Image (cartoon, rainbow, N blue to C red; front, side, top):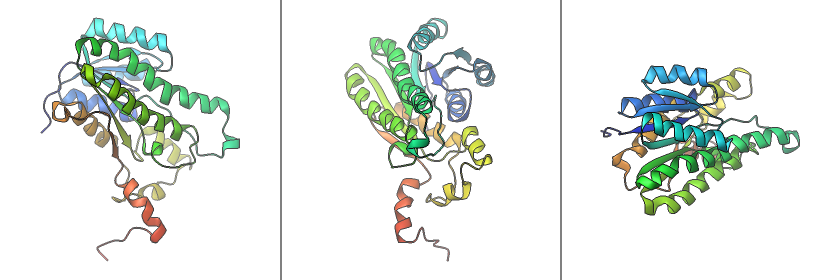
Length: 260
């Protein structure tokens, strides 16, 4: 049983997908949730659902994030948990087909945005000598994929997690990462509906033969943010239905059904 969470939890990208799931689960565990998103209307809907408050910011814009951090601390109280979930996905294309505008946008949000929000909210955590930051990375940052902007950006988030954990650990701030596998978010579902992803291939390459649900990611985030994980920092936790374990088996003909 995970203990009750205390204080204010900020979820970037909290208006949808994994971020919205994190907002819901953290609220049920006792945290007061600030939903931070550039779409403030959708953020407001999630905030009302979880009894929290919505704030608008573009995580790639340093000034707006710093202003949001100051406002949240002033209006809601000390931030004890930050979940960096804001991110955008990328269509798998060849390098020559990937525009620099798309590349820069992915890096700006997924990589730079995680850094900007971490630094902005860590300032007060470091002064209080307590706090937890959980970054939403991806299994794409752990393997080669035809996602030439997204995968390197998520690999950078994993590296950033380790660097900041060592930097801020002596001041009592823990920094961790969760790497989701293929998760049934609205963004992935839209890609499936457009024919950009084959859901059967996504599921069949995982040991559990299914996609991850957003709430399953959120539950791991809540555990890492809880006192039960107080000795954990600088680690990356894959939540992927066994995709990382299963994919090498394709070399040997694929997974075997033990029921046959």
